Length: 381
Ligand code: GLN
Image 1: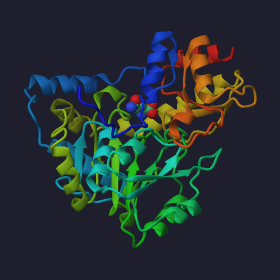
Image 2 (image 1 turned 90 degrees about the vertical axis):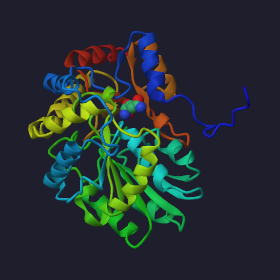
Image 3 (image 1 turned 135 degrees about the vertical axis):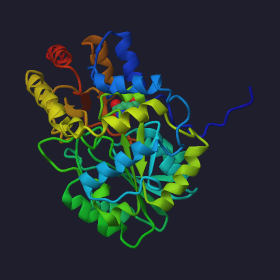
Protein backbone atom coordinates (compact mmCIF):
# COMPACT_ATOMS: atom_id res chain seq x y z
CA UNK A 1 0.00 0.00 0.00
CA UNK A 2 1.30 3.50 -0.78
CA UNK A 3 1.90 5.65 2.30
CA UNK A 4 -1.23 7.41 3.49
CA UNK A 5 -0.69 11.01 4.46
CA UNK A 6 -3.49 11.69 6.89
CA UNK A 7 -5.57 14.78 6.37
CA UNK A 8 -6.70 14.45 9.97
CA UNK A 9 -3.61 13.23 11.82
CA UNK A 10 -4.97 14.25 15.23
CA UNK A 11 -8.27 12.45 14.85
CA UNK A 12 -9.05 9.07 16.42
CA UNK A 13 -12.34 7.19 16.69
CA UNK A 14 -15.23 9.35 17.87
CA UNK A 15 -15.97 9.04 21.60
CA UNK A 16 -19.56 8.00 20.83
CA UNK A 17 -18.42 4.84 19.09
CA UNK A 18 -15.74 4.19 21.71
CA UNK A 19 -18.20 4.41 24.63
CA UNK A 20 -21.02 2.54 22.86
CA UNK A 21 -18.62 -0.32 22.05
CA UNK A 22 -17.36 -0.36 25.65
CA UNK A 23 -20.97 -0.37 26.90
CA UNK A 24 -21.74 -3.38 24.72
CA UNK A 25 -18.61 -5.21 25.75
CA UNK A 26 -19.43 -4.79 29.45
CA UNK A 27 -23.18 -5.12 29.12
CA UNK A 28 -23.58 -1.63 30.57
CA UNK A 29 -26.63 0.64 30.52
CA UNK A 30 -25.74 3.09 27.78
CA UNK A 31 -26.26 6.72 28.83
CA UNK A 32 -23.34 7.68 26.60
CA UNK A 33 -24.15 8.13 22.91
CA UNK A 34 -27.24 10.27 22.41
CA UNK A 35 -30.07 8.12 21.12
CA UNK A 36 -33.49 7.15 22.48
CA UNK A 37 -33.94 3.50 23.52
CA UNK A 38 -37.72 3.52 23.15
CA UNK A 39 -39.80 2.81 20.05
CA UNK A 40 -40.48 5.46 17.47
CA UNK A 41 -43.97 6.28 16.22
CA UNK A 42 -45.56 3.30 14.43
CA UNK A 43 -47.70 5.47 12.17
CA UNK A 44 -44.53 7.04 10.78
CA UNK A 45 -43.02 3.60 10.16
CA UNK A 46 -46.25 2.62 8.37
CA UNK A 47 -45.98 5.69 6.16
CA UNK A 48 -42.45 4.72 5.08
CA UNK A 49 -43.66 1.22 4.33
CA UNK A 50 -46.59 2.61 2.37
CA UNK A 51 -44.26 4.82 0.32
CA UNK A 52 -42.05 1.84 -0.49
CA UNK A 53 -45.03 -0.35 -1.46
CA UNK A 54 -46.33 2.45 -3.66
CA UNK A 55 -43.03 2.44 -5.53
CA UNK A 56 -41.27 5.53 -4.15
CA UNK A 57 -37.94 3.72 -4.28
CA UNK A 58 -35.88 5.60 -6.86
CA UNK A 59 -33.86 8.79 -6.53
CA UNK A 60 -35.89 11.76 -5.52
CA UNK A 61 -34.84 15.31 -6.43
CA UNK A 62 -31.24 15.91 -5.36
CA UNK A 63 -32.30 18.85 -3.22
CA UNK A 64 -35.04 16.88 -1.50
CA UNK A 65 -38.58 15.68 -2.18
CA UNK A 66 -40.45 18.89 -2.99
CA UNK A 67 -43.57 18.25 -0.86
CA UNK A 68 -41.26 17.74 2.13
CA UNK A 69 -39.40 20.98 1.45
CA UNK A 70 -42.76 22.75 1.12
CA UNK A 71 -44.06 21.49 4.43
CA UNK A 72 -40.75 22.45 6.07
CA UNK A 73 -40.98 25.99 4.67
CA UNK A 74 -44.49 26.24 6.07
CA UNK A 75 -43.38 24.96 9.46
CA UNK A 76 -40.52 27.47 9.56
CA UNK A 77 -42.92 30.27 8.61
CA UNK A 78 -45.30 29.31 11.43
CA UNK A 79 -42.65 28.81 14.08
CA UNK A 80 -40.14 31.53 13.31
CA UNK A 81 -41.87 33.93 10.93
CA UNK A 82 -39.26 33.44 8.20
CA UNK A 83 -40.29 33.26 4.58
CA UNK A 84 -38.19 30.44 3.14
CA UNK A 85 -38.24 29.48 -0.52
CA UNK A 86 -38.45 25.66 -0.59
CA UNK A 87 -37.02 25.54 -4.08
CA UNK A 88 -33.90 27.60 -3.39
CA UNK A 89 -33.30 27.64 0.35
CA UNK A 90 -33.83 24.15 1.78
CA UNK A 91 -31.87 20.97 1.04
CA UNK A 92 -32.69 17.60 2.58
CA UNK A 93 -29.57 15.72 3.69
CA UNK A 94 -28.54 12.35 5.08
CA UNK A 95 -28.43 13.67 8.65
CA UNK A 96 -27.58 16.85 10.52
CA UNK A 97 -23.86 16.05 10.77
CA UNK A 98 -23.68 15.73 6.98
CA UNK A 99 -25.48 19.07 6.60
CA UNK A 100 -22.89 20.72 8.87
CA UNK A 101 -19.96 19.22 6.95
CA UNK A 102 -21.46 20.25 3.61
CA UNK A 103 -22.11 23.81 4.76
CA UNK A 104 -18.52 24.21 5.97
CA UNK A 105 -17.13 22.67 2.79
CA UNK A 106 -19.15 24.96 0.59
CA UNK A 107 -17.74 28.21 2.01
CA UNK A 108 -14.38 27.58 3.68
CA UNK A 109 -11.13 28.37 1.89
CA UNK A 110 -7.66 27.45 3.17
CA UNK A 111 -6.54 30.02 5.72
CA UNK A 112 -10.05 31.01 6.80
CA UNK A 113 -10.72 31.10 10.52
CA UNK A 114 -13.76 29.57 12.17
CA UNK A 115 -14.81 30.43 15.70
CA UNK A 116 -15.80 27.31 17.62
CA UNK A 117 -16.88 27.10 21.25
CA UNK A 118 -15.51 24.51 23.63
CA UNK A 119 -16.91 22.12 24.72
CA UNK A 120 -18.57 21.42 21.38
CA UNK A 121 -19.83 18.56 19.26
CA UNK A 122 -16.86 16.52 18.15
CA UNK A 123 -17.32 16.75 14.37
CA UNK A 124 -16.89 20.53 14.15
CA UNK A 125 -13.12 20.83 14.41
CA UNK A 126 -12.23 17.99 11.97
CA UNK A 127 -14.81 19.38 9.53
CA UNK A 128 -13.03 22.73 9.60
CA UNK A 129 -9.50 21.27 9.47
CA UNK A 130 -10.22 19.00 6.48
CA UNK A 131 -11.17 22.13 4.56
CA UNK A 132 -7.79 23.73 5.28
CA UNK A 133 -9.33 26.30 7.60
CA UNK A 134 -8.25 27.08 11.15
CA UNK A 135 -10.45 26.55 14.19
CA UNK A 136 -10.26 29.43 16.66
CA UNK A 137 -11.34 27.92 19.95
CA UNK A 138 -13.18 29.87 22.63
CA UNK A 139 -14.00 28.21 25.96
CA UNK A 140 -17.54 28.57 27.27
CA UNK A 141 -17.78 29.94 30.83
CA UNK A 142 -17.60 27.13 33.35
CA UNK A 143 -19.90 25.99 34.99
CA UNK A 144 -22.87 27.58 33.19
CA UNK A 145 -21.35 27.22 29.72
CA UNK A 146 -22.46 30.67 28.60
CA UNK A 147 -20.69 32.43 25.73
CA UNK A 148 -18.00 34.98 26.50
CA UNK A 149 -18.87 37.55 23.83
CA UNK A 150 -15.95 39.76 24.77
CA UNK A 151 -13.66 36.82 23.88
CA UNK A 152 -15.53 36.41 20.60
CA UNK A 153 -15.10 40.09 19.78
CA UNK A 154 -11.37 39.79 20.47
CA UNK A 155 -11.07 36.62 18.38
CA UNK A 156 -12.65 38.10 15.26
CA UNK A 157 -10.06 38.98 12.61
CA UNK A 158 -10.10 39.82 8.92
CA UNK A 159 -9.80 36.07 8.30
CA UNK A 160 -12.86 35.07 10.35
CA UNK A 161 -15.22 33.36 7.93
CA UNK A 162 -17.63 31.64 10.23
CA UNK A 163 -18.96 31.35 13.77
CA UNK A 164 -20.38 27.96 14.76
CA UNK A 165 -23.31 27.94 17.18
CA UNK A 166 -25.28 25.11 18.72
CA UNK A 167 -28.48 25.60 20.70
CA UNK A 168 -29.77 23.63 22.55
CA UNK A 169 -26.18 22.72 23.19
CA UNK A 170 -24.54 19.31 23.06
CA UNK A 171 -23.02 18.30 25.49
CA UNK A 172 -24.10 20.86 28.12
CA UNK A 173 -27.84 21.48 27.67
CA UNK A 174 -27.21 25.26 27.65
CA UNK A 175 -29.28 27.41 25.27
CA UNK A 176 -28.84 30.73 23.50
CA UNK A 177 -30.61 33.62 25.25
CA UNK A 178 -31.77 37.00 24.05
CA UNK A 179 -28.54 38.68 25.17
CA UNK A 180 -26.54 36.17 23.09
CA UNK A 181 -28.50 37.05 19.99
CA UNK A 182 -27.99 40.78 20.63
CA UNK A 183 -24.22 40.32 21.03
CA UNK A 184 -24.00 38.11 17.94
CA UNK A 185 -25.92 40.64 15.85
CA UNK A 186 -23.53 43.44 16.77
CA UNK A 187 -20.44 41.35 16.11
CA UNK A 188 -21.40 40.09 12.64
CA UNK A 189 -23.02 43.29 11.37
CA UNK A 190 -21.25 44.61 8.28
CA UNK A 191 -18.77 41.67 8.18
CA UNK A 192 -18.36 38.74 5.79
CA UNK A 193 -18.88 36.24 8.59
CA UNK A 194 -21.20 33.29 8.05
CA UNK A 195 -22.99 31.54 10.90
CA UNK A 196 -23.29 27.79 11.09
CA UNK A 197 -26.14 27.08 13.46
CA UNK A 198 -26.57 23.50 14.62
CA UNK A 199 -30.20 23.37 15.77
CA UNK A 200 -30.80 19.65 15.73
CA UNK A 201 -32.37 19.84 19.22
CA UNK A 202 -34.73 22.63 18.06
CA UNK A 203 -37.78 21.03 19.72
CA UNK A 204 -35.97 19.49 22.67
CA UNK A 205 -36.16 22.58 24.85
CA UNK A 206 -37.55 22.69 28.38
CA UNK A 207 -39.36 24.85 30.93
CA UNK A 208 -41.32 26.61 28.14
CA UNK A 209 -38.15 28.50 27.12
CA UNK A 210 -38.04 29.90 23.59
CA UNK A 211 -35.70 28.48 20.97
CA UNK A 212 -33.65 31.35 19.55
CA UNK A 213 -33.30 29.99 16.04
CA UNK A 214 -31.30 31.97 13.49
CA UNK A 215 -34.49 31.64 11.44
CA UNK A 216 -36.14 34.22 13.69
CA UNK A 217 -33.71 37.03 12.82
CA UNK A 218 -33.57 38.17 9.17
CA UNK A 219 -30.19 39.90 9.65
CA UNK A 220 -28.70 36.66 11.01
CA UNK A 221 -30.54 34.34 8.65
CA UNK A 222 -29.09 36.17 5.63
CA UNK A 223 -25.64 34.86 6.67
CA UNK A 224 -26.61 31.48 8.18
CA UNK A 225 -26.59 27.81 7.37
CA UNK A 226 -29.11 26.33 9.83
CA UNK A 227 -28.92 22.55 10.26
CA UNK A 228 -31.65 20.22 11.53
CA UNK A 229 -32.24 16.51 12.13
CA UNK A 230 -35.42 14.42 11.90
CA UNK A 231 -33.78 11.70 13.97
CA UNK A 232 -33.96 13.91 17.05
CA UNK A 233 -37.61 14.84 16.46
CA UNK A 234 -39.04 11.43 15.72
CA UNK A 235 -36.79 9.19 17.86
CA UNK A 236 -35.06 7.60 14.89
CA UNK A 237 -31.40 8.70 14.97
CA UNK A 238 -30.52 5.69 12.79
CA UNK A 239 -32.55 7.08 9.92
CA UNK A 240 -29.83 9.66 9.26
CA UNK A 241 -32.02 12.29 7.71
CA UNK A 242 -31.97 16.03 8.23
CA UNK A 243 -31.92 19.29 6.31
CA UNK A 244 -30.20 22.61 5.92
CA UNK A 245 -31.74 26.05 5.45
CA UNK A 246 -29.64 28.88 3.96
CA UNK A 247 -30.05 31.93 1.72
CA UNK A 248 -30.28 31.02 -1.97
CA UNK A 249 -26.74 32.15 -2.89
CA UNK A 250 -25.14 30.13 -0.10
CA UNK A 251 -27.45 27.18 -0.71
CA UNK A 252 -26.41 27.10 -4.38
CA UNK A 253 -22.82 26.42 -3.24
CA UNK A 254 -24.01 23.90 -0.65
CA UNK A 255 -25.77 21.99 -3.41
CA UNK A 256 -22.64 21.90 -5.59
CA UNK A 257 -20.93 19.94 -2.81
CA UNK A 258 -23.97 17.83 -1.96
CA UNK A 259 -24.71 16.74 -5.53
CA UNK A 260 -21.32 15.07 -5.93
CA UNK A 261 -21.20 13.58 -2.49
CA UNK A 262 -24.49 11.95 -1.63
CA UNK A 263 -26.51 13.35 -4.56
CA UNK A 264 -29.90 12.68 -3.00
CA UNK A 265 -31.38 11.48 0.27
CA UNK A 266 -33.55 8.43 1.07
CA UNK A 267 -36.82 8.73 -0.89
CA UNK A 268 -39.43 6.70 1.05
CA UNK A 269 -38.56 8.41 4.33
CA UNK A 270 -38.94 11.83 2.74
CA UNK A 271 -42.33 10.89 1.33
CA UNK A 272 -43.42 9.68 4.77
CA UNK A 273 -42.07 12.75 6.56
CA UNK A 274 -43.79 15.13 4.13
CA UNK A 275 -47.09 13.74 5.29
CA UNK A 276 -46.25 13.10 8.97
CA UNK A 277 -44.88 16.61 9.56
CA UNK A 278 -48.39 17.97 9.11
CA UNK A 279 -49.22 16.56 12.56
CA UNK A 280 -47.88 19.52 14.47
CA UNK A 281 -48.60 18.07 17.90
CA UNK A 282 -45.94 15.43 17.26
CA UNK A 283 -43.13 17.96 17.42
CA UNK A 284 -44.89 20.55 19.57
CA UNK A 285 -45.17 18.08 22.46
CA UNK A 286 -41.57 16.88 22.24
CA UNK A 287 -40.08 19.40 24.69
CA UNK A 288 -42.54 18.42 27.46
CA UNK A 289 -42.09 14.73 26.78
CA UNK A 290 -38.31 14.85 27.08
CA UNK A 291 -38.45 17.34 29.95
CA UNK A 292 -40.29 14.69 31.96
CA UNK A 293 -37.33 12.40 31.35
CA UNK A 294 -34.89 15.09 32.48
CA UNK A 295 -36.91 15.68 35.64
CA UNK A 296 -37.23 11.99 36.40
CA UNK A 297 -33.52 11.43 35.89
CA UNK A 298 -32.67 14.40 38.13
CA UNK A 299 -34.89 13.00 40.85
CA UNK A 300 -33.24 9.57 40.56
CA UNK A 301 -29.76 11.07 40.59
CA UNK A 302 -30.42 12.76 43.96
CA UNK A 303 -29.53 9.46 45.61
CA UNK A 304 -26.09 9.39 43.96
CA UNK A 305 -22.99 11.41 44.76
CA UNK A 306 -23.02 13.22 41.41
CA UNK A 307 -23.84 16.95 41.44
CA UNK A 308 -26.10 17.54 38.51
CA UNK A 309 -25.96 20.73 36.42
CA UNK A 310 -28.93 22.46 34.77
CA UNK A 311 -30.09 21.29 31.37
CA UNK A 312 -32.41 23.58 29.42
CA UNK A 313 -32.55 21.49 26.26
CA UNK A 314 -31.05 18.55 24.28
CA UNK A 315 -30.89 14.90 25.36
CA UNK A 316 -28.13 15.63 27.84
CA UNK A 317 -27.30 16.70 31.35
CA UNK A 318 -23.91 17.03 33.00
CA UNK A 319 -22.93 15.64 36.37
CA UNK A 320 -19.87 16.69 38.41
CA UNK A 321 -17.89 14.32 40.60
CA UNK A 322 -14.77 16.39 41.50
CA UNK A 323 -15.93 16.55 45.16
CA UNK A 324 -15.53 12.79 45.58
CA UNK A 325 -12.89 11.70 43.05
CA UNK A 326 -9.69 12.97 41.43
CA UNK A 327 -9.90 10.64 38.48
CA UNK A 328 -9.77 12.15 35.02
CA UNK A 329 -13.09 12.24 33.19
CA UNK A 330 -11.91 9.58 30.78
CA UNK A 331 -10.75 7.24 33.56
CA UNK A 332 -13.96 7.81 35.48
CA UNK A 333 -16.16 7.14 32.43
CA UNK A 334 -14.27 3.94 31.62
CA UNK A 335 -14.24 2.75 35.23
CA UNK A 336 -17.95 3.21 35.81
CA UNK A 337 -18.71 1.48 32.52
CA UNK A 338 -16.60 -1.50 33.54
CA UNK A 339 -17.23 -1.67 37.29
CA UNK A 340 -20.75 -0.27 37.61
CA UNK A 341 -22.07 -0.98 34.14
CA UNK A 342 -23.23 2.50 33.20
CA UNK A 343 -21.71 4.21 30.16
CA UNK A 344 -21.45 8.01 29.96
CA UNK A 345 -19.34 10.45 27.93
CA UNK A 346 -16.36 12.33 29.43
CA UNK A 347 -16.89 16.01 28.64
CA UNK A 348 -13.13 16.35 27.95
CA UNK A 349 -13.88 14.60 24.64
CA UNK A 350 -15.65 17.77 23.53
CA UNK A 351 -12.55 19.93 24.06
CA UNK A 352 -9.43 20.14 21.96
CA UNK A 353 -7.50 22.09 24.61
CA UNK A 354 -6.99 19.61 27.46
CA UNK A 355 -9.74 20.45 29.94
CA UNK A 356 -10.87 18.28 32.80
CA UNK A 357 -13.54 19.81 35.04
CA UNK A 358 -14.52 16.35 36.34
CA UNK A 359 -17.83 16.32 34.53
CA UNK A 360 -19.60 13.50 32.71
CA UNK A 361 -22.39 13.75 30.16
CA UNK A 362 -25.49 11.62 30.75
CA UNK A 363 -28.09 10.99 28.03
CA UNK A 364 -31.53 10.92 29.69
CA UNK A 365 -33.56 10.36 26.52
CA UNK A 366 -34.30 6.81 27.64
CA UNK A 367 -37.13 4.61 28.96
CA UNK A 368 -37.89 5.09 32.67
CA UNK A 369 -36.65 1.54 33.39
CA UNK A 370 -33.33 2.37 31.78
CA UNK A 371 -32.92 5.52 33.84
CA UNK A 372 -33.92 3.66 37.02
CA UNK A 373 -31.45 0.87 36.35
CA UNK A 374 -28.66 3.35 35.61
CA UNK A 375 -29.36 5.45 38.72
CA UNK A 376 -29.50 2.39 40.93
CA UNK A 377 -26.05 1.37 39.69
CA UNK A 378 -24.70 4.91 39.94
CA UNK A 379 -25.67 4.99 43.63
CA UNK A 380 -22.79 2.61 44.27
CA UNK A 381 -20.20 4.89 42.65
N1 GLN B 1 -25.22 13.32 18.55
C1 GLN B 1 -25.00 12.12 19.31
C2 GLN B 1 -24.33 12.43 20.63
O1 GLN B 1 -23.87 13.49 20.88
C3 GLN B 1 -24.15 11.10 18.64
C4 GLN B 1 -23.92 11.20 17.18
C5 GLN B 1 -22.83 10.27 16.76
O2 GLN B 1 -22.62 9.23 17.37
N2 GLN B 1 -22.10 10.64 15.78
O3 GLN B 1 -24.24 11.54 21.42
